[in-house]
Image (cartoon, rainbow, N blue to C red; front, side, top):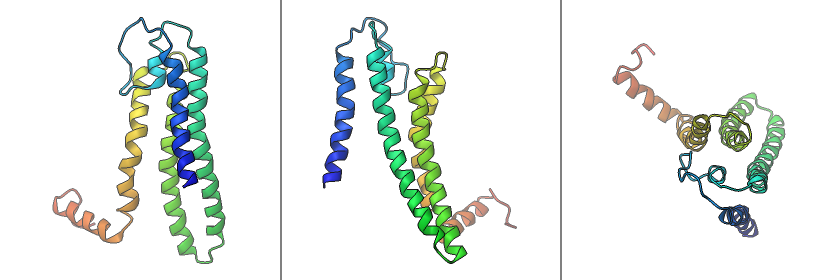
Length: 175
């Protein structure tokens, strides 16, 4: 329960301070956010004042919120890998590494793409379209990978999918 409270409080507080600082800014320019959702950095770009403090604070909080959990996840996977290496059977080891590697791929895509999006605001000349595509990819790709990770690894589901694809002539019957 304590961990849950800390997670909720941390999530709430990490967004509260940048929002309070952003509300105090004067906005006198265009009223269109160049993003597919109301991203903090995109809103800051609309301000008519010095946003250096807001920008640095926002980046620091965003990267902390991303990199601290990523570090803890990677440390837990290091412990898992150490335990897996102690498994005597090569088949069990291979199966565990296969599952862990797919999870790590999805986690890495999510966290590293998000970090790239946040950092890209500080790189002059970075395309807004590229930033938007990366943000959409970061939020869409991991949930799309879950069916592959959890379903297609099951032999019955995989066999059923292949049978359906053969019937619809996507794959030749000889497969």
